[in-house]
Amino acid sequence: MVAAAAGLLLILWLITIPLAMAPEPIGNNAQLFADGTRVTVQLTVVSGLIGVVLGVLAALGKVSRVAPLRWVAGFYIWVMRGTPLLVQVLFVYFALPEISPWLRMSEFTAACMALALNVGAYNAEAIRAGLLAVPKGQLEAARSLGLSRWHTFIDITFPQAFKIALPPLVNNIVALLKDSSLAFTIGVVELTNAGSQVKSTSFQAVPVFIATAIIYLVLTTVMTQISDAVERRFDIEGKLG
Amino acid sequence: MSQTAALLAGEPLIRVDGVNKHFGPHHVLKDVSTHFNAGEVAVILGASGSGKSTLLRMLNRLETHDSGRIVVDGIEVSDDARQLDKLRTEVGMVFQQFNLFPHLTVLDNVALAPRRVRGLSRAEAEARAKDLLDRVGLSAHIHKHPFQLSGGQQQRVAIARSLAMQPKVLLFDEPTSALDPEMVKEVLDVMKRLAATGMTMLVVTHEMGFAREVADRVLFIDQGRVAADAPPEQFFGAQDNERIRAFLGQILH
Image (cartoon, chains in turn cyan, yellow):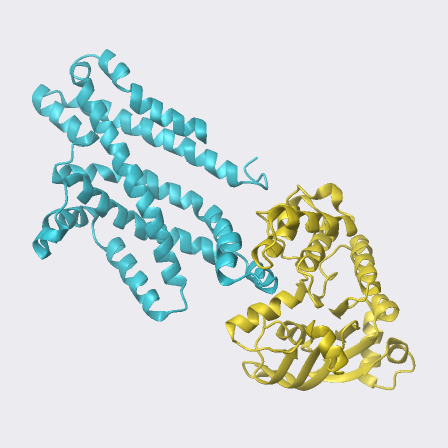
């Protein structure tokens, strides 16, 4: 897991080198591609982390015994999954500042916020499924030992639920990495935007978009490696072989 | 302390008064009254669906009762969260399906509750856990995870886990019913040794040998009522109750 994460950092650090060695029009725009890649990864990591927290909160809301919490969580998930991400990105960036000037934010922040809100709704369903999959006997054992509701959740339910939710969560984060390209529409210079800029100056769409796609593929591959390592870390029963 | 006080006052450790329980239209327990004294080993028998597990599970509020009163060690069993947490620290439970925590090692399974509930340091809790695991014969397995153990070993860990809280009474809900025959003995042996230490135990089981040999009392639950409550020699002796004779006949073949 540490190795895979270090690999990702190394790729971000050194990506300019192979890009610079590539033929025109990639080589002479290596810096732009590298910067775009970094922004794409930043968007994914920031909104991914916030999205997991939002997902946990919304999942807890949805299984809560307090009805208003269930309604709020249900409404959030319903809206976020039922509207296009592109509309959400545009709404956060263009519409929120009109509602209140306090909600004016930079392109990057707005993109992070929209992406986090969106992935959080999908994460909530993954985590909720995990919470519901923990056998009832686990709760009974924890409660009959005198553990409080809080410790039952933190020590017993959540670790088991998270393990079950991990594969769908990773799936969501990989989708998020690709969806971060929608930040292009509000002017964030991430990888797709960088590729598009190079295309408009070089007029060579084929090599530009092949290079762009390959970089995405490398990133998602590394990400899957990290998630496999995390899954293995949690797989104390050796089910993965 | 309160247990001693209760004993001096002649008050039983557990008192069940006129308790009723329904599952939908099904009247599971009908006006059940009984009590259990400290240091007593009571075996609860009955056909499947007779309400015996329900009675046991109501004593630490894993099931609610519809009416009547249950008082354990001076604590009224109710929905009051604070009282409930206190009650559960004094009442241990061993389940048919063991319900060990699969993500924790054997040692952590046993040491967790004393740390979280009793406020013991990790070192203190682990020392207590090691001692208990030694007593149930599992010293060699403390760093394993539950899935690496046999059913009999898992149930012994579960017993150690309950004991780590130093409860005043231990409830056993069919502790050997999910075990392969060759593993039943190792669990019953641990339970017998525990009974010999003076532990208060309420055991729902089909192990007649255990009831005969260890129990101070045998309760027979039939159609939601306590149909018999007698010392084992009397219960298993000349039994004039037709339904009990039929039940024993089926169990003993």
